[in-house]
Image (cartoon, rainbow, N blue to C red; front, side, top):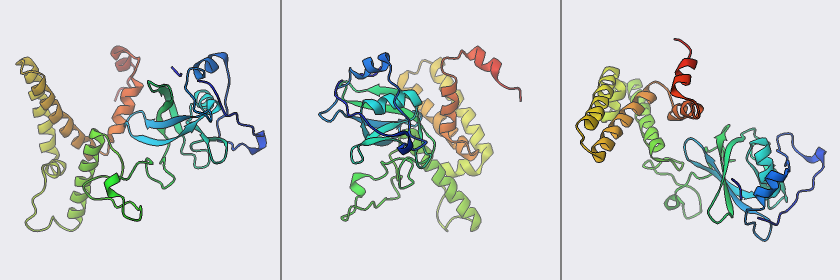
Length: 271
């Protein structure tokens, strides 16, 4: 799965290594994989950490042979610090580790992606990812100036939708606390759904039925995609209303990988 040469070996005494720092574990198999990577003149490759569920880019650093070896052995994202000339594991001081589930290389074999789940905020600022500023929102002094139209992080489509729904829920609760929205302001459709559980449930049933009918009536891929989008949207409103994150659903799906549906159902606890 991994694919070079040249490396910067790290020399450190046991006493100088933080308890949370992963250590390389060399095996012939790992070394053979690392030999396939195209290392730069300093024995490094670009290393990107990405959330396996949300697809969010968490951070970018550099890794040498030992860093990737340590990542494979510990299942925690480990990098090489060019300034300190040593390995460092994300979370070794904050405990916000990135638990790696897989490592991918690009087509040129000169960069890697650590796919994994963060234990907490990835950025030292406390943000979920290090990529939370749109280029157009950089102020003249280099400071971030976030607009209300764009969330302060790079989100994929479904997570951007979830963020919008959460904003509507927050608005609804704020207005409820102040006895209603401003005069003349009509609530959005999302707010109407959030404020009427019965309406929301009926819409999900309606949209699911329309999705099935689009297949039964052979209305074509475009129609099926449109109906599925309606089902997804209304279902995500329901999730938000129940305090369930879309990430929670993806976690359940990931746990079901490589498990048959029959086995999964048999293993469910009776409720």
